[in-house]
Image (cartoon, rainbow, N blue to C red; front, side, top):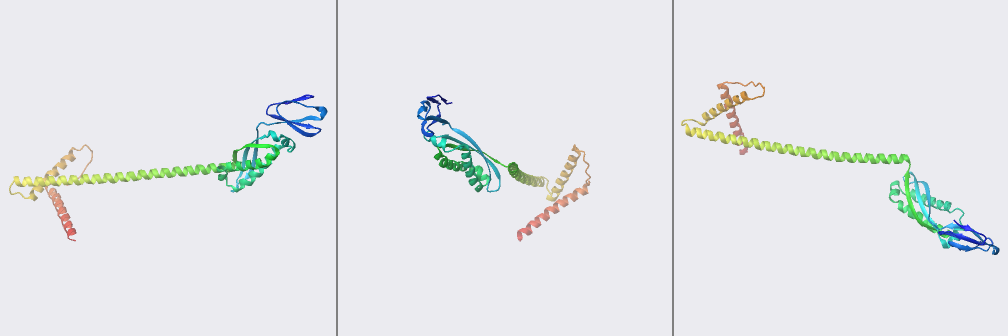
Length: 292
């Protein structure tokens, strides 16, 4: 606030006064008390604040990929004390002048960028605006302190489309990860099944080997103990014993399952002959393969 009286004027801190004499600029009056001689034609024409002022400018323009956007620029400026007379006399409305140059620079740079590039390089746009304003407004006694690109607002339909694209990309990425996880599970399951089958085969082979070794040992022991017996007779006896053990196990089973099997001494002989013939055929086939 500035108080003026007939012969003096008090100018507040962070302000300067413009003193004229007979309508012509005389001097710049700093903060404090100043004596004005009206009889000599001196007059306090006005005061200017030297505080930093902020001006928000909203610019609508189009990007290189034909997207309409609104840019909100915050220009912080102040009056240079030494050149306050230029700021007072040269510009009638400095805010309109600053706004016009911001429009000109932004609309010259943004159409050369895509929307993504604009978001990534908004600092370059602010720098270009700062350089232009410093060059122009400096001659009018204004100092441009800083320019901030506060916001970039695309058209509402473009924002919805961008959100949908982002959501679709995330869904696609999630599907890829889900597919990879299912693939790993299937591979691990197949490997586990293969390992289980391998181990089962090894177990069956060892079981058959143990049965074969046991049968061989029983045949040899029986042949040595009972003289005059042949290996075929001992094998038939073992088969009969195994046959009756199987019948016993089926009878003792707790499952309510009905199984129809042929029963009788003749059937036991048939089973023994089938096993013996199978063993001989396998041995013959193995011998032919080795000869080839």
